[in-house]
Image (cartoon, rainbow, N blue to C red; front, side, top):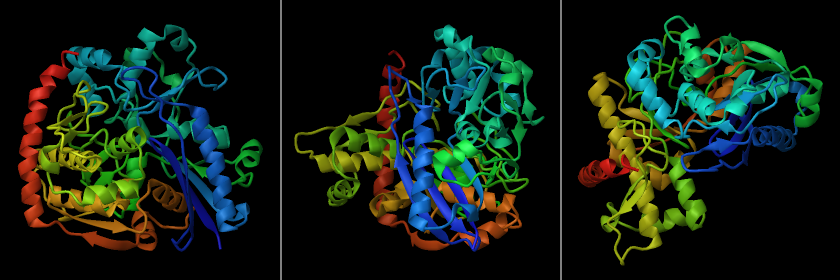
Length: 490
């Protein structure tokens, strides 16, 4: 038997999935690492943490599965888009990576949007906001000129990890679409956009297809990871694309609801839907796109709450489950790093409102879970009004947050749609499937889905609960509208 390995690098952890060529999951492993907040608005990650997680995950999977590393046909890496890393002439990092949720570039984004927003939009299908690499690089140039002057290469997260494995500097076109340095019409780096950031096209990686085999595991990487020297490594692509793929959403009209570091609702379409409040990316299935909404702090909100106030997820869920919808008047807005859909406002802040002496820790827990549900509902309403298209009434729930039965039911009730779950919708599974396409194990995306994606359960919405959530949502919206002008003054 031969195997395929996919490794994801998310906002707070790396997960690895090993499958056999029949599409069965053989072993999984997760390694957590910190996201760093060195100053207000900052959100960074240490590239050394990525590499340590890669090595630990690879070794753990080999140990758990008991397989010979030589039986792994190919490896694929994925990660969140927009997370960039500046390196010197020797490919050494000059500083920590700037995570896509970093909001320090809001002044730069505002200036780019005001002066050149329409021109940038025509090329990239998006208008400048803090999530994109272009304004982040302008911020770096203006605030850390001594670092900026030494930049010779700019990596994106998965590409730096893959460089460690192969010594090959490259990226894929879907990743490039998330940089705001790429012309989505001409499918190439754009010199004018690069000039706005103060860089040249030569600093950016050559572009490959996600399924291209771009190199092989080097001797040094083999020693560090336990993988076999010479193992094929493919280009890979972004985490959300791989989650969408791993969920089985490869046909027009398929829908995914993502509960991960960020929250997303994506609809598979045959074209992009350029809009400031939507994120548009190509699908790996030829001719398709997966435009969608983005809630910045989804599972990140729950993790922040757990880490700040203590407890384990299972214990927290048990307390929250006993409380009524609406948390007896306590409402949470999950704007810990600003918000995207439908506000595109980096100045928004998280908040608990309506606090009473009668509220317990369980109330605050449930408020966090409900707050994310309302944020996703906000996104869904915007998506429905904007796109005006027909899509499936059963969505696939993806991301680590879907493991919680309570939260999954909340989201289903709040959105008013059924959510099906699969054996695994993790992006690392998608990457393993993608590796299979690259080396000929699967003919195409449809065959990979047919052989690897296994439905487990469906959560149906309770109409009575949907009505209750919608009533609280109206208050949620009014609180946003009241507080947003205050936050903009900060």
